[in-house]
Length: 268
Image (tube, rainbow, N blue to C red; front, side):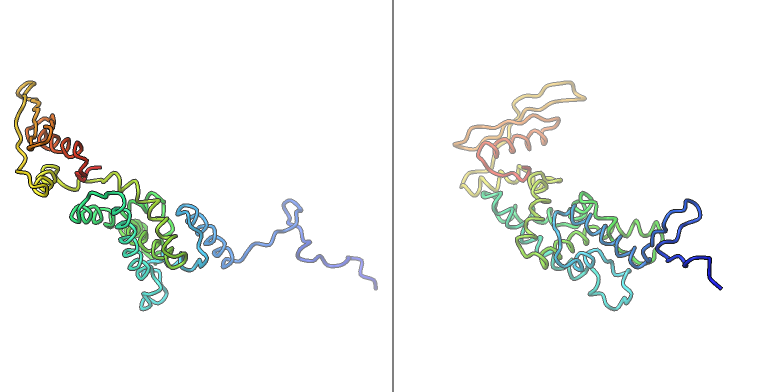
């Protein structure tokens, strides 16, 4: 007896019931996860401006110890890369400061360096690059996870620097740091030194006496006075500052004299 039902349909030719359209094979969960990871990695590389030859380095740089299958193998987390990145960052920023502030002494350079390599600054860079969502954590609550991501942002930033250094060498790491730290170097978040102290130390280094501050004028009502103060050093033109208190006016006068003499006050 002949079979009039026709040949069986192959899976690729089968149609769905709703629209009689060919079924599209869906990727397995494992393949989908790998695809998602690649998309996330590509987005991170675009934001940091560096493409890794060894993508595992980037993965490790974002892996918190809580996400490890074997907690005893802490070397698979970002910690080693963070250690390396911290020192690479210090070297690159030291070089940047040395070149940018040729008249700054060791004390000022050290203060600037400490400000630029602190965890808070690294975390700020990580936030600017939107790196927080790439951090891989273990099973934690939503609130705890959000807090943990914020607390390790600075570490992740340093780990990324370490990963770039391993993958692309010093030049690549230096380019990343220079791109993300130059503006921060030029505009410190916090004043580094009191300009009166800087002026006194500079004067002593030149063999000059201690700067003398004198009130030139006081104006305005008692509840909102304005002080104009001048600072004098032998052989130099006086400099003036105006402020709501004598101390504020003295600081501004000291800054004005430092600028007049081309000396860094730590506020540039």
